[in-house]
Length: 287
Image (cartoon, rainbow, N blue to C red; front, side, top):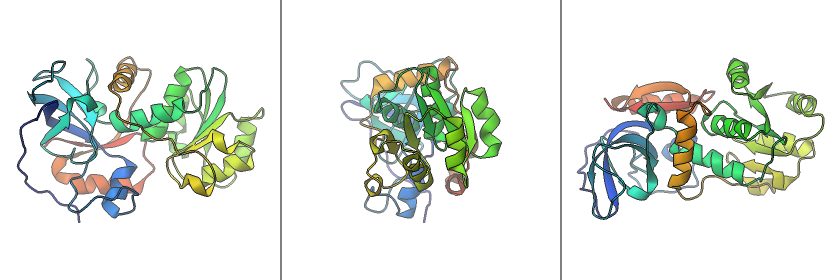
């Protein structure tokens, strides 16, 4: 039921900017909204897309810190996959020199979700954490953020992503049958916290290993069923976006692009997203 349509785009209002779309990052929440499986209920028809990057082509009154021509990235609740995106200036940040726009397109939602989830556990250098789907959009950023802070990260992923995880300082572990035994062997002195991006397997394994429920955070399952935490992204926070972009620019965080599709082939991009098993993000780019 996903189709391309033509809409009139209003000029930016007070405190808004209008951005010429360069690229947009897809996230699991996008296919859940598209399929009707999301807890986010939106009246149809829904304009899809939440992450974007591009260049500002118009600014509304009261916007003093951004200008026409600035390369920016950001996130809005819906409608980011369009030739022109109107957004509050408060939800965008500048793209640093050296960061391609298709990479910047995947920072805002996945990056801040990872940042906020990690911050919720108050970790310290030397802590040992488990991150599921550690090569995916949120998991990949969260893992690298934690490594940069001196945390020992064990990441679950398919075998094809293990070499990449090692290159980013993450100890890879295969998911699936036998996960409990593999995690116990990888963390003989115990696990400080677990961050789940994949679902019930990770949560049930963590609890079976004695990780306290308040030290398990999921964004992929119903936390209330297990009594664990459910900290995802809070309100868009431009200083956090600036910090994330700087970490991408200096190489601390690598954001792989698993696949690129032109905006006119957005349906194919969603189909690729829904197959899962990604390293990084699926991105749509301007035709």
